[in-house]
Structures are given as structure tokens and as C-alpha cells.
View 1: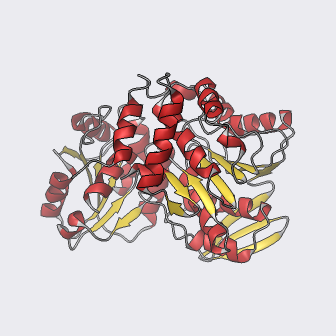
View 2: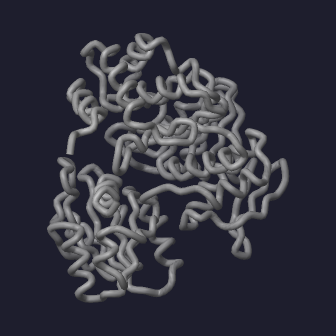
Length: 424
């Protein structure tokens, strides 16, 4: 099969900077200026930062806006199966010709200068957004906020900070307060900011940054409330009360993500129809996603296969809650993680909910944690753990014990992407 032209250009872009992460904005400003500053010509921007829930919150906002006829650009990262997933133009994934064109243009405009892969591809997304009419632009932060490549819009319509927890310490700081300070860097002077549930240390920092920038806050527990009541989602703010179905994205944590999305939609003046669509029509792959078709599913006709890309302790807590709330059925994990993550912190909450863990190395990923080390970490938090050469081998081992098992493939978005590519 001929390699898509966009893939060829993306491979070239990988060579423009030796570091995967290098958080400064100078290179962004230089290239954006060379491109004619497309960041100044975007439809109204909703900028989303946070440690967990950014993608789900974005998906819910998009579902709500599109349900009432709004056209929406959306930018997210990383992609799972194809790069095109990162750039959604007025509701549709960017096509191959359009992607190749903007990547080529950005590569040429960069003139061989040093720039990271994420920076130059973000410039390509902004260029595509600026040239395509839409009602809103949803920008999801890649890492942090203050120095993230998406943080180049002077006056977004709205900022959102989803729950902040400890992750990416090597880039964002060791303490929750330091990490919250980086996330709060998306707050702009006078621009309202929706704030999801936060630990006190994080909220203190966010409130201080907002006060310094005279940015009005819409804070969970102060300005809006959301809860489960009698099998329904109940949301309330100064505008009134909404009694809605539960989110179609599974897990109690999605109630809080829905609350942030609803707060954003209400601030934008959306009606109840938009709010209901936000919780009932959103789709976000690899977030407790049930696999229902494909080669992997065909090998396990009696089993229940799930996929999740969460990879930090907060994600582990959320997954554990989902597993605890499900029907009683032995649950097995097939887990592959990166060597930069808090493996024990991620696995510990899930230990009481799982029968056993089968550790794998992530295929084609240089920063994968070896399967043996993942298994050792699992044993240290009280799990029964085994090693396998691949997801397929692990699944076969599980099915030999229990053909009707519930199996969750988890630990990394890179592993999730590998599964979605092979199982499509």
C-alpha cells in the first residue's frame, strides 16, 4: 500500500527537533508570523486544559453545539489510529488532501528551522481552522497550558480547566500547586473560565491567577453543581436546574466532565436541547469504550472487551469506580504503560476490582515499560500478574481460563491506538 502523503510529511517534521517536549512558545510565534498569523482569524475559541477529562469534556461540548446546528472545529491530541483524528474541520475529520496541503505549507514556511512536531502540527491545525468557516473552535491543550503550543490565542471566548492532578512532573513541576499554575496559564485577561472539581491546593492557584487577570470564574461547587440523583444527572447554576439522562460515556467521573461541559454551554447561551445532546450524543474513543466488532472481538465471542487509554492515578481511580459499579463478573486487565508514568499509582485503585493483570510491552513504542516491570509493579500493589508477548497472546491466556471474561485493555493511549488500528 502506498504511504499517504501526509504521513511522509509528518515523518519529515519529526526530524526538525530532537526533543519530544520542549515547552517554549518562541518557535510557535515565529512560524505563525510566517504563516500570516492564522491564530488571529479563528472562529470563537474555547480553550480546554486540565490533567483528566479534557477530551471527554470537549466531545460533550461539541455534541451539544452540533445538536443545535452549530459548526465546530476541534483540535485534540494525541491521535489514536490516524493523525487526521487531531483536526476536525466544521464537524468532519480533515481529509487527506487538505491535511497534506497545510502540512506542506507549514513545512515550507518553517524553512528548516528547529521546531517540535507538536508545534508545527498545531500550526497546521490553526491554519486549517482559520481558512474554514465555523461557529466555534475547540482547542485542547497538549501538555500543561502556559507554554503549550495551543496557548497562542489572545482572547478566547471561554477557557475551561478540568480536574488537575499530578502527572508529567518532569515538565510541569512536582507539586499539585506547580502543575495547577501551568494549567492556569491558559486564563486570559477578562475571559471567563469554567473550573471543574479541584483539590484545594490547585483551586487556590487557579483562583489567584484568575484574580490577577480579572477573569471571571465559574467554579464547580460555587457557581455550578452537578450530581447523580435517582439515576439521572442533575445540574444547577444561577440560570436554573437541568434534569438530564446520565452521560452515555461510562463512569461516575463523566458526570463531572458533563458538568463542566454544561457550564460552558450555558455560558454560551445554549438551550436545554444542546445540554441534553451533550450528555447523550458524545463519543470519545478509548475512554471505557466497549469493543463490539473487529478481529480481536471475533476471537472472543463470549467475552466482554473494553478499551481505555487513561494512564495516571486519577484515571486509575475513575476506572476502578466503573469496574466496581458494573455487574459482578471476573475482570482481567491487559496492561501496557509508558516508562514515564506512575505505574503503581495507576494500578493500585484497580487491584480490588480485578482477577489478574496480563502485562504487555506497547508495540513500536520506544518509551514502553517492559512487560516484566509492569507485572512486577502490579504484584507490588496486590495484583496477580503475568506477562504476555502481545495483547492477542494475553487475551488467549485469559480465555483459556474464562471464555466469558470481562477484559479491559488499558494503561496508555498508545496501546489503545494500536488496538484500534488493528481492530478496525
